[in-house]
Length: 421
Ligand SMILES: [Zn+2]
Image (tube, rainbow, N blue to C red; front, side, top):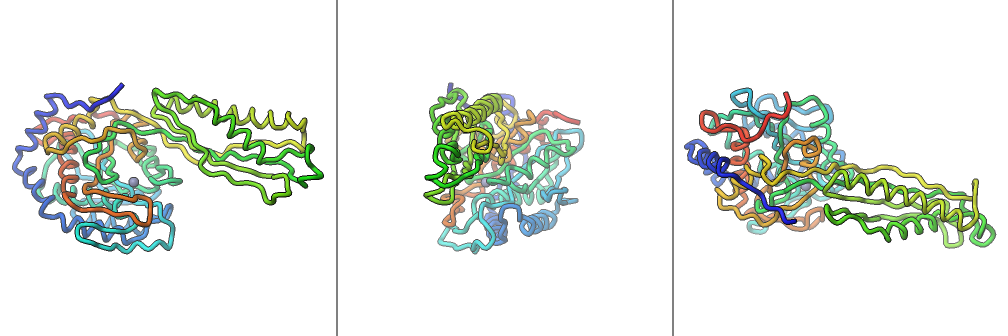
């Protein structure tokens, strides 16, 4: 079944009403006039290293930048997310707009930005300093033009979106007491991509352990952890996972053993399982873990080993990104797709992705991911680059989408529904 985003006439009319507002017109113009400033922000943030679990320095600067723009009460929550709020008229829905502060690059990575024409090179320049810079530009436009909304807009720099960060910033944001009704995550450059939902992902370290011993003297007596792990991987490899909705598995890393003439005492593998459906994901994970236990039993049985001569298997969960999906006519999809149409931005992709949006989606809140503008390449590599051409399209798209969702005071009612409070 192929899916396409929907924008009803009712929402499209609201978007036209917002677009015809003189202050909104000025705000959209401002995104073009201030593209230089936006690029400068992006470079400044990129050159503050922000390794996994060490985002504090960049967070401090991002917070200061929001404050300097004129956002009141910018603060950091208990774990360090940067949060600022643009208040609406009251009693409206609350929309979160977030980009992540962390990168995948370790301490000591050279983060100096190199420019060649409109192209900028540096680790993190696009993912996700593009998102942070685009959010700052949105804030500058809304504040300068004194645009009054019905609902509130909450601007957030989140921690730990990448890899083993496991969305910890966004998870903390939505786990603590809050009044949030939906989210736009700003990540990746392309404004032509609109995310339909969040891919769920569970990750495990699978650990086989045994006594180990001499490869000759203990042969047939002591079971090898490597042989046990290999049997488990082979058995999982035979599985045919569900295809609708899609579900995948991958053993991405294996380690184990100490010497060619020693029966391995330890072997481990990192396993990543994904699905678009949380239910399918959980069912498949349960099946996989069961089969790995079965493989361990079969390995011990094959050598007639028991007690200390046998191997045992344990699992350590190392990742959990919840899945979630929007209806094709969900408020965020309608607002974003309708805004793309109104601004002449074509839709190239309507995929699932794993970003901060996964967290609100898992709470049943509408959430999607919009691009930060320009074009990009080699994300997560030292050769990462970003091209600033037409990057102003992103703040324009975010402003129009956000105003559609929270409502423009005295002009339109919010499209985003109040879920909490
Ligand atoms: Zn990212």
